[in-house]
Image 1: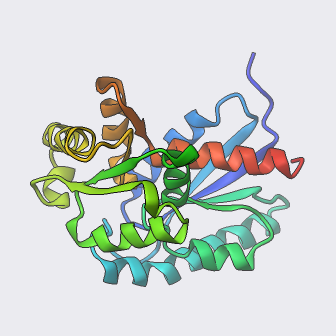
Image 2: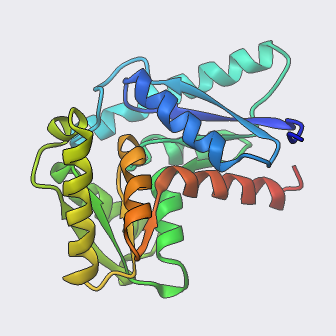
Image 3: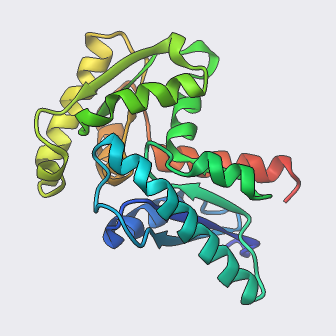
Length: 232
């Protein structure tokens, strides 16, 4: 018997790739299966197909805000409302601004992954394919006061757009970066840092004995926790 749907969550993809939006939406929906919550996905109207540098990350903040506010307005006009928002890019562009503006939980996948990975003082690292975002990721860790246990970022050898076109190479190189995090840096948990890397993150989680922190499921769990705490 399926669980009756009691509300919906809005997932926004700051990248403009609609296929990535649907992949992340479906993963969030699977993570919330049985909770009564459904997930709708929206895509930023402007910006790059994949955020790979700090300039694009910063510029995407306004696109994320615009997309979310339009979707919330449209939902209200249609007679329903969203219960929470997930910002589905690892740098959480626009999350803090929306969190201040809205009266509903706004969760970033970077925020949720960092808090999950670093819980109870655990040592954690990140594996990713975006070298130009290393400083931004470290700053996000610091923003959430988790720097003490952070072992750093390990990178793939190839560029992100190259790996996006070759899932098997992406898997192999990210898995190697995970092994560097654990074997060289002593991390107990590793975040696969990137929304578009979600499918590969799941494969790596199935192939490694260390804890792999997947950002989309982490954000979905955080949303569920926030809604339960608020009695929704």
